[in-house]
Amino acid sequence: GQQVMQIPQYQHVQEGEDFTTYCNSSTTLSNIQWYKQRPGGHPVFLIQLVKSGEVKKQKRLTFQFGEAKKNSSLHITATQTTDVGTYFCAGRSGNNRKLIWGLGTSLAVNP
Amino acid sequence: NAGVTQTPKFQVLKTGQSMTLQCAQDMNHNSMYWYRQDPGMGLRLIYYSASEGTTDKGEVPNGYNVSRLNKREFSLRLESAAPSQTSVYFCASSEGGLSMNTEAFFGQGTRLTVV
Image 1: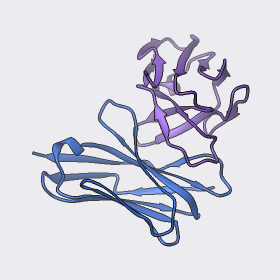
Image 2 (image 1 turned 135 degrees about the vertical axis):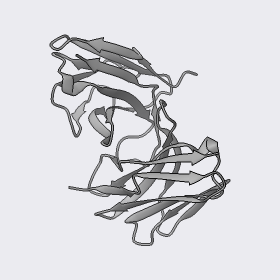
Image 3 (image 1 turned 90 degrees about the vertical axis):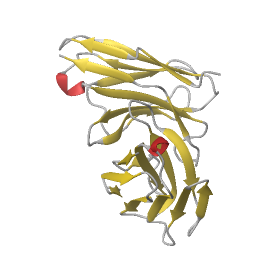
Image 4 (image 1 turned 90 degrees about the horizontal axis):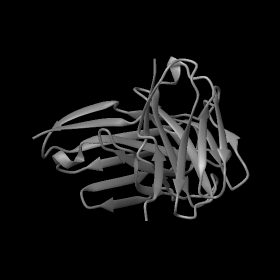
């Protein structure tokens, strides 16, 4: 079945360093969404990418959708302690009506 | 505007007991979902409801039942709780159906322990 693989599983950085998490799908995706979950919290929607090669920015966060629409990345520039949490990608293929979630990347930031 | 409200926030059950997790949304969304989240397993879909009056199985439906009571409310029932159902349960809703590109809004979660 369709799978969305997310790497790395964990990342520990010093405050000010950059961070990137990657999502790779076994099938072409119609869209991909990114969510952030703070420790003890619930997932909160960050962004959605739909177009091939799409790049979107939210302040220090840059989201990309691959040309083949099979992979995506989230890059955080100059991490801050407020970036701590788990980042999930979730994608949907044309043949699958359900949103398939990656397992998430947990980010820890040392002040 | 409360968004998605789940009750209870915490629950401890004994094996074999039953309980219902309640979820309500005030955003007039068509679709509602129940997920469970376990360490290292990410979010797994238990059941979803694409519209009022319809429900469908997700990835891990065994041991659960759901009711879409009306457009606002979507409840999850554990008929005979088992330790394997110890998890954090999230209810979510979205404006469109599963085939539409709409974001999901999550409730605060229910932390369930079955002993």
